Amino acid sequence: MPQRPSIKFSINILNRTVMVGAVHSALQLTNTELKLLVHLINAKGNVVSRKNLLTGAWGMHPESALQLATASRRVDVTVGRIRSKISKASERAAKAIMSVSSEGYKLHCHGVRWVK
Image (cartoon, rainbow, N blue to C red; front, side, top):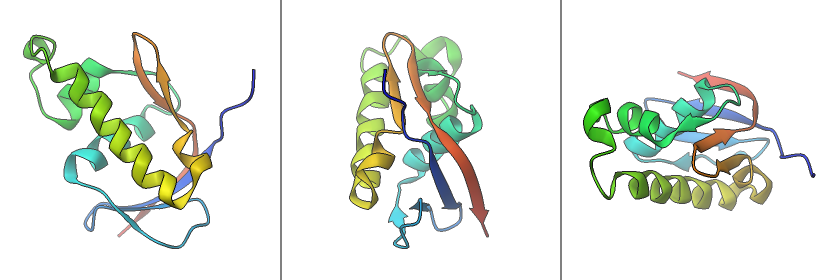
């Protein structure tokens, strides 16, 4: 099985921008996209469930998060937008966000630089 790429990110929380790998152009993310990406980064390669992403990135109450019929799809669409934006900088980087069937998502990341 081929190894997933591991990517390095530079993140500026205040400006909501992300730089991927050695690419020197900043990618603009929405607040929700940035929160979701930070949750994946903080998981350190472990799977993050859709429910945990809903509570973390959208602030949904854990009991109500899975009651919404569209809630799970909301996570999938947002991850798709993040992948699309990151792929403009690096197609390889977009593949670092991995879907785990029936569970959630995980990110193969080997370093994060938090920019102030």
